[in-house]
Length: 311
Ligand code: NDP
Ligand code: OXD
Image (cartoon, rainbow, N blue to C red):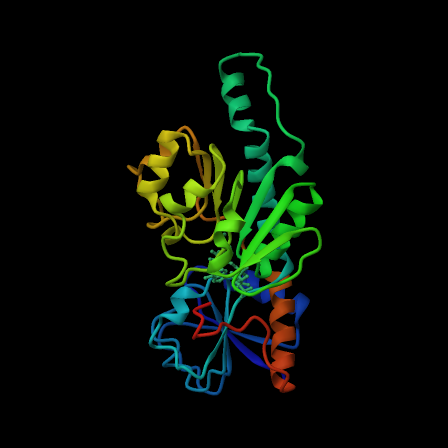
């Protein structure tokens, strides 16, 4: 019998997902959630913005496939029973989009393309110098599914790449630091910092004045983790003093970013509306199918969130 999987989401178009599953994982029967629909007997659900009471309407839920990598909202949701596995999305579409976004912003900061765009608007023919990529110190905070892929990509583009995570790991050509006791060594003199951490009590507010002081003067900051990891007032002060030279921000404390927020019009901040990377339905369908197969074969799920760690 084929597994049944509920799509409970206020934004995801059911037709698109149905087509993706039909093509990439036809063995899975996709069920469209509707308000108040009885979903008993179904063990799997996928969602990003769930419909009301979906977990109460799924008494047999075993695994929740989140249509994104950041699962902090789900871990904090008391209506999800503790025995339900919460699974972070990990699929090539999401990963490659993040690699592209970060690479775009690292190159932009490395070569100061923003200054070139300004010069063009003023019809100024300017000169610029820049170091070789291997002399540019770039660091990635968070070396999970996305951070590790990004660090590898930056390394492959020649950058002097460092990474920081909770546990020790080896990534070819990347200097890796682990744990809070090594964060100062990781940050020391970095010229471009990428945040790809999950939001947890330890990472909330981590991008603050103390951290900025450890970077090279004029460093670039790319935040694609979560808005609550950034102390916004500290960033504005660091941009004023020049300690931070430019920031690329995709995530914010309040989303959508309020129209009057100073970040929108700041000359050295690039704002993107939380779209650094998104799930590709077809490769996500393939990934979920593999996960369900593993789970049904008793092999356990990959990328399951750990409630005690908070990610
Ligand atoms: P993972 O859970 O796979 O990886 C998280 C990484 O962060 C791990 O390397 C982990 O260390 C590290 N980490 C967690 N806590 C700490 C800590 N206190 N100190 C040091 N390192 C820590 O997540 P993903 O890579 O899949 O995603 C990362 C985040 O990216 C998501 O949580 C989400 O917030 C954000 N995101 C943003 C998107 C956007 O469009 N802007 C899109 C997708 C994701 P360890 O390896 O030791 O466990
Ligand atoms: C995610 C996101 O966590 O899009 O996947 O932010």
